[in-house]
Length: 270
Ligand SMILES: Nc1ncnc2c1ncn2[C@@H]1O[C@H](COP(=O)(O)OP(=O)(O)O)[C@@H](O)[C@H]1O
Ligand SMILES: [Mg+2]
View 1: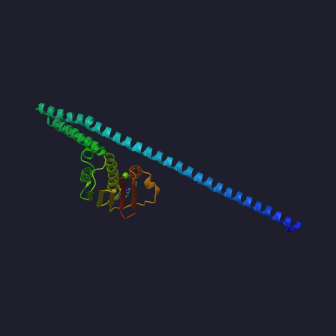
View 2: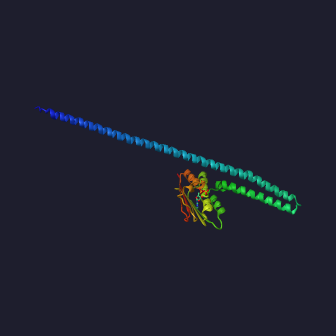
């Protein structure tokens, strides 16, 4: 049995098919454009991340280079000062002492000038040694971070500034490079407290365990406004951040006027 399709219905069906095809093609086109757009955005984002990572890597490499160069230079200058100028001044002082011994008969006004000169040479010797020591403390290289910090703190403590240093070391010694960088960071934080805080108490806590290193330097001084960008334009705080970043750690500087300052550093040990 044949069913005869009326021509009008046939045309109607043909138009419907045509329309559906156009709609489907449009839909596929819109979908492709949408996916294409999304994919392009994803690609751009990926490129951006790659560029950002490259910039960060370059910055870290530059900081590492600067820190290494700075430490090498400090070591060299400290060595030259101690072994060069320091030794020369010591020898000069010994010669002057010997000369004074030989010149038995000496007019009182000359004697005073001579002893003053010897005293000044001696002072120069001590100062050169102190500068060399501050640049690269021997005890840091020989005995490590904690003895070096104790030594540093003992030299700074005074009647008006009490310093508490507590160190808990549960992990084996850190590598020498990490110790030097940490020493510099604590040295700067402590120097800042001495220079700017007018504090009466300084508390330094150091913990080295399996997770990493935690250091806090806290003073009860006048504090400062950490939201002021100018405070971070000097070398000290900037260097603290650069050095801690170099060790892949984090630093948090909390302070406000009248509330003291807390510098908290965390270095993960991998
Ligand atoms: N412990 C602190 N107490 C009070 N002010 C501080 C302290 N540490 C830093 N500051 C403020 O932050 C500024 C920037 O410090 P820093 O970068 O070390 O530079 P500098 O010590 O050479 O001035 C200081 O000039 C001071 O105003
Ligand atoms: Mg400073």
